[in-house]
Length: 143
Image 1 (cartoon, rainbow, N blue to C red):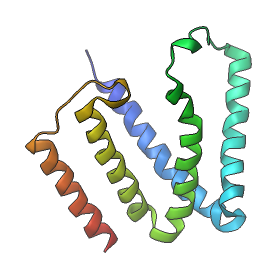
Image 2 (image 1 turned 135 degrees about the vertical axis):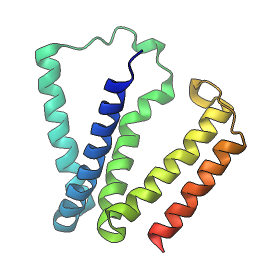
Image 3 (image 1 turned 45 degrees about the vertical axis):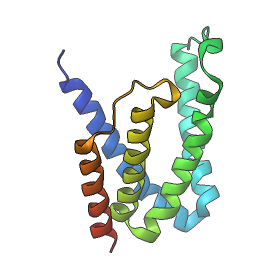
Image 4 (image 1 turned 120 degrees about the vertical axis):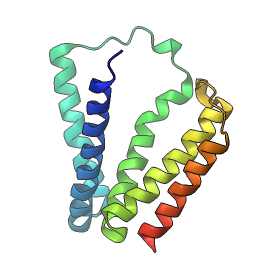
């Protein structure tokens, strides 16, 4: 399997998250956290509605989705709000270092214990060492 398209999509997503953080920081300073979240979700929601009206959506298997997965939208609000609040105060690099580091730590725990239907990938010494180095990097960027 050629992984190049997946790498490109991941990089595009990373670029989008970083730009969104900076843009939300600007809006947060002018409109406050609630205003910037409203604009971000309002514009995104409008695009999703238009896209769904044009292309349709299949929700037939909604009963097969675990109840907790429906919290993704609420978690999105937490993500967007925290990014908009933190970036103007800690900077883009400092804020995202903390955000990404916390993602990696939780992801490693989810993998290790198989929470939320994840495939189990044990937290061995190499992974722990990688997490440790990343946390040192977070400290160095935010000192």
